Amino acid sequence: MISWKSKYEIGIEKIDFEHKTFLSLIVDFKKQIESPSLESYIVNRAKEILKYAEFHFLSEENLMNEISFPQRVEHHYLHQKLLEDLTFNIESLVLKIMAPEQFLDFLLNWFVAHTTQEDLRIAKFIKNEYYE
Image 1 (cartoon, rainbow, N blue to C red):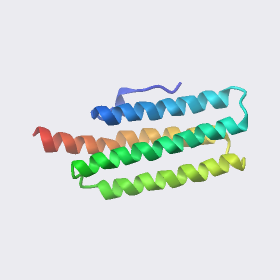
Image 2: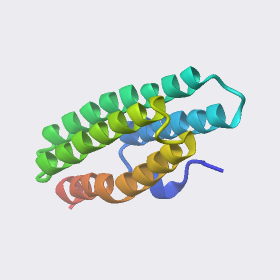
Image 3: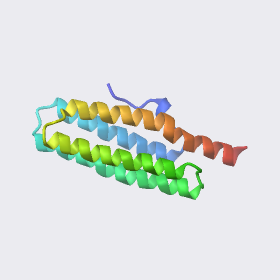
């Protein structure tokens, strides 16, 4: 079962809310592939995740700019790489090169790793910068 865990929280209310929304889209995708669905519905769910990722990354990058996060350029490139990977994987879904379950695994692995490692650096920077 895919569910929100406290380890995904970085302590920035807006970003945590967006991460919860991101995870709920992944859960919706999982439900879509577990039910008898048309392939176009599955692909549309994947495209929805891509569009939300674009929004969320822009939101996160605006925050990094506001706080002058030192690794914001590197973090931006991680976001760009993910968007490229998402686009490629969606094209693979359409061409039936990739199974929906593989796409789900990719999403989950990326979400957990990025949130608990990369995004946590932003929170640590804010805590050290503003609360010491």
